[in-house]
Length: 141
Image: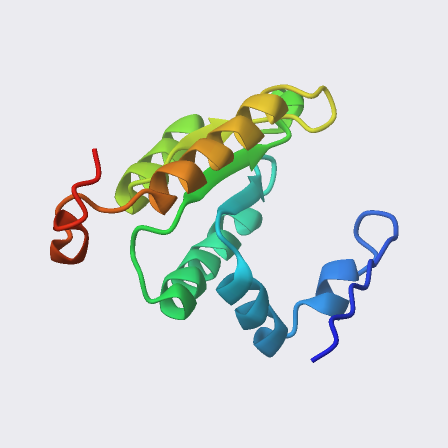
């Protein structure tokens, strides 16, 4: 089957995600994804609530609880407008067993570290499980 790569561009809030994230397409993106960065705006409590079913969908599609995921609160540069506390984000990340970071795309705060961490998570997940009976005979050190 021929692969088509389409890029959707536009200003923030114009509906790009609404156009592209049909439920069936989202399942396909998730199925093909190896690592996931779940981002909410720390100045928008609803965006924090919205990511919970997204993680549930990842687990459902991947059929595996230990998928590389990082929970990210973005817009830390807008501290005075904060609606989601750091402790709320940290608590959810602990519940999910994943790293938590707060970033600012605007000021480039922790952005490099975020992508370095998701790569680390994906590399770790790609290593054979030494407790897996299938791999124990491989003598992987």
